[in-house]
Every structure is written in C-alpha cells, then in structure tokens.
Image (tube, rainbow, N blue to C red):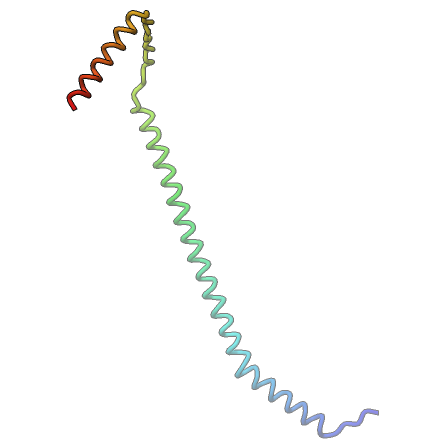
Length: 116
C-alpha cells in the first residue's frame, strides 16, 4: 500500500517555495525582457514599413516627373526634314593626266626636300 510520511509534505513545501522564488526572481524579469525586445522589434518593423512607404512615394513622384519631362521633350523636339543625298562623281583620269599629276607631285617633293 501507499504509506504517507512527512518527507512527501516537506518535498511539496520545497517545491512550492522554489516555484514561487523562480517565478518571482527569474521568470518574471525574463518575460519582461522578452516583451520589451518584442516591442522594440515591432517598433523597428513599423519604422521600416514607414520608410518603405516614403521610398515608394518618392519613386512614384519621380516616375511621374519623368513622364511629364518626356511629354515636354516630345512636344519641343523639332521635326527633322529628310536630308537630300549628295551624289559625288569621280572622274576617271586618263594616262596623260596621271603622268602630269605624278610629275607635279614629284617636283613638289623634290623642291621641299631641297629646302630642308
């Protein structure tokens, strides 16, 4: 059978004393620290969300300004008329013309070299 003695009651009293001391001096301060950190984390997350909202608003404003600028540029760009193509003709020289040009170039080079 089950025999009750005084040690069971003493263990129960010790258990309740330790439980009270732990809740009073350990768990409550630990819970307070945890709650405080969670509140700080929540406030930081709120600040981050607010900053993201500001950034999104600035991006939308910048995009709107760019669209306005594009519209203004589209209105003020002058229209370009097509340019007429220039046609160049190259005349072909005959043998006498080539000899004359070669002679002129040769005499020019010789005269320049003589001056040096």
